Image (cartoon, rainbow over all chains, first blue to last red; front, top):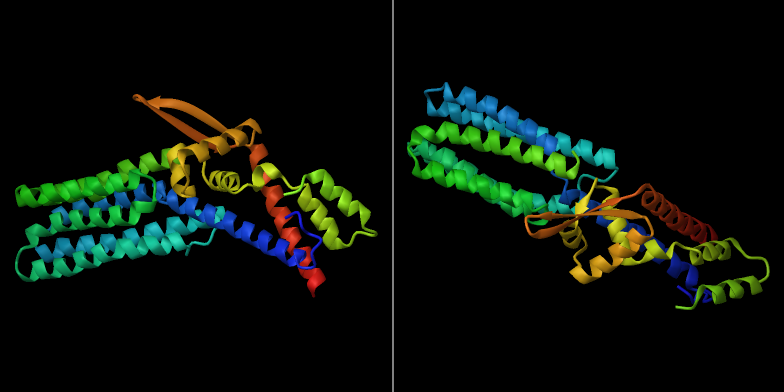
Amino acid sequence: MSRFSDSEAPVFLQDRAIENLQFIRQTMERATAYTGVSGRGLVFVGVSALLSAWAAQQQSEAAHWIFIWLAEAAVSVIIAAGMMAQKSKRLQIPMWSETARRFLLSFTPPMLAGGLLTSILYQYGLPHLIPGLWLLLYGAAVIAGGTYSVKIVPVMGSCFMLLGTLALFLNPQWGHVLLGAGFGGLHILFGLWIARQHGG
Amino acid sequence: MLPQKKNNRHLAALPDPTPIEQTLQQTMDLDRLIHERIRLGIVSALAVNKSLSFNDLKMILNTSDGNLSVHARKLENAGYIQCKKSFEGRVPHTEYAITSTGRQALEHYLHHMESLIESTRQVQL
């Protein structure tokens, strides 16, 4: 810094300035992704999941309630992406950050495994195992994706895994209740907590 | 790193400061408090969050307890951040938030870096 009389000094200083700006941007990105889980988004996801749980419980055909929950998953992805986009826009930070990429890389594999196992269990006539499987694998995905996030996120993942374990061991009639408690209850509960603690 | 006084004298000795030198002069007057890496990181992280705990900041900045607390203390003394200490059971819990002074300082610093890049680019072209 102090040897600016060198002929190369301006370039050197410019590089330093660019590097400083990059550092600020990266830190903001990390800090946002860190608390970037939109608490309000989670609450919305939870509310729509409660509606789905109610609708799914009315179905007698396994294929019907599975379809309702798959539609719910698609709706949740849209809600979550929308809330994230809104938050990044408000903070003027690119949504497609390095941290977001890393999150998707660790979140997606358990979800893909869940999708595959769902079709297999359905084909083999074991749909009563599906609620436990979903809760368990979604919990695993949240823990993996939330490694770089506020501690409360992996805690939420653990709660999902716990409910999934319960669902696998309890009488299958509890399946719908546990799905509602997990995707509805846990999302609302932790969403409210995150919104209160980490602003929005 | 040379003391600031000496640098200024060095600049003053030059005839007709060029735009670069003016910018360099500004750089010397730079907010040293915020320029340091960990401190710049603390202020940047807090600028995009309502508040962050000591442990949150430690994770985000990937630094040690001692390092973080020393730098956070300096920022706190300067009024750039404020800290709230409490107990969660027996575990002490420290929560940090940026002040309006701190936000201004960060904006000033950002502006400064941008103008530095801008003026250097102009001269190079």
